[in-house]
Length: 351
Image 1 (cartoon, rainbow, N blue to C red):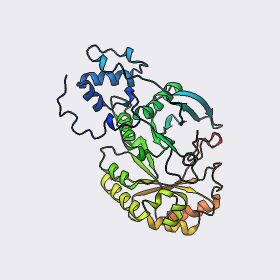
Image 2: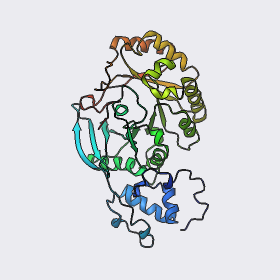
Image 3: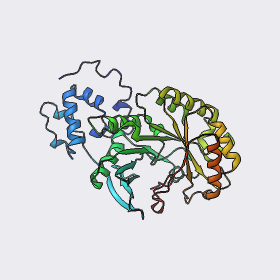
Image 4: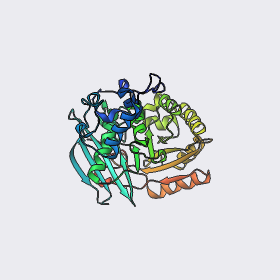
């Protein structure tokens, strides 16, 4: 079946927009591939071969008439440089080497049959959050859609299990690499590929206001997690430098619009740092800041890194913090610390 020229008129993110134009079949969304092959039939055949039959090279794809059009698009996976297993036996950190020798980290977590992969979207990060190991290493480059998808393909293969949840909380700022991240989500949620429910995908951002605005107009409606960490501009900017570009007033406005348009709550991440953002006043400021927003607060005791001298907030202060949030009827959770012993926790990924 051939497709007409208007078949893909709604595609706003195509291969030409993909940074670091690395040829890979994993780069293609279904619509991109159908457009490239001029056939939805052959695109479905390729997707079935890649994501359901798990073929490992193009030669294994049974396709006569169109095979030449994908011959130069390999199915390369990253090279595993190291695997470190946590003492909890449920968390493994994979250090992966890309085609250009750059290193990234992915984390596999399995708890009660719920397998989760934490994926990276960049080599390094440009956001510079002071307590984050990835931010401390600086930015090198974006990952392609294919390099994001290949992380999941590889870990499913090695772990001999199917991923249920994907969190874009690895190295990098996902919305800084907007096109590749959105294309990857297209593939993850495509019933012809991974068929992962959108409610099982979480995208974390440090708060890039224009990109959140773009996200509102995207058809995907995945979980959004916003790294907040401070409830006033002064407090937040000392921890999250990007706040100087987009102050809290702008960030909260776009978050309110997101919850109204998407009809979903936002998860706000709050890394609890002793004597920095764990006081009673901080809790009141946070509760007032989130007024009118469907929110859930994730309280994350600081995971220490070599580049930051702060220490986690004390348990008693975190409990007081929670009590205040509860008084404002704001749902909240103290995030479980997993994989900390192998530096696989939130903010610890650094190659």
